[in-house]
Length: 302
Image (cartoon, rainbow, N blue to C red; front, side, top):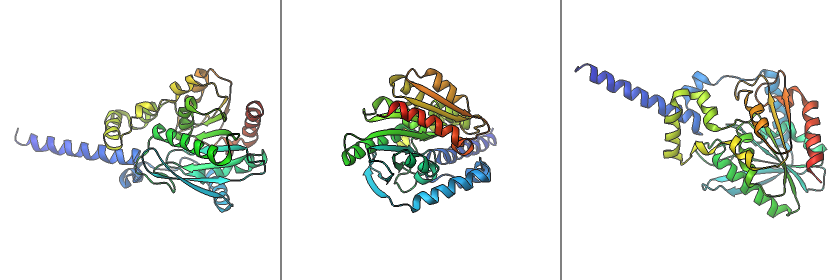
């Protein structure tokens, strides 16, 4: 019995340490060197990375306006505005995903939106890119911050601007969470590879550790992951929406897109791309993607 107690304490300490390290890996900007070495591998082929990174570099090099606001949590947030070829009244607001940043996400879409008469705006979420912050909200506070950005854009460019929200992965969940609270100048939403809820997505990744991570995030960062329920949010809106996902997505299981599409009661369309992995649909099927976006814009924008 005397020998069993130290072993039990050691096991408990190892379990606590493991949970803390997993929490940093999943929920914190700092990440975890241990879990990054063990779990983070490449989820795309080299052709995709070359395409994405090349277009991101081109976007960063373009003339742009750089803006800053404060998040609801007090962090300094950075946004980037690119003027297109139109009259400045149509804005595509692209929302990046988990552990990504503005140019990495938006670069591949600049040529499309510019050619359709849109300006482009993209921001870095709290704890991503150039913005401040330590913790990731999985859409909870990111949705609030993006609504602040819409207020900022409306104040700067006029109440007559028309906005298309286009989100990717966690950013897709974010735009869906925003949808019931969007002002009238948000005319359409594209969700690309979004998850139905943060709890469902994280359960598939961390399994039995989800209750511990959920509790830690609420206590340490003030984030209630149960609020990141995109499927519930879109039941409360009728903004025209396009649902996009690759059928070979290893990160957000493909079943998410059809489930979201079927539950949505507003005007809607979908694009499911054979052979595309996570957020690869524009890379794999650019013409089909452009045609779906053209149809959405044609219906939603005056």
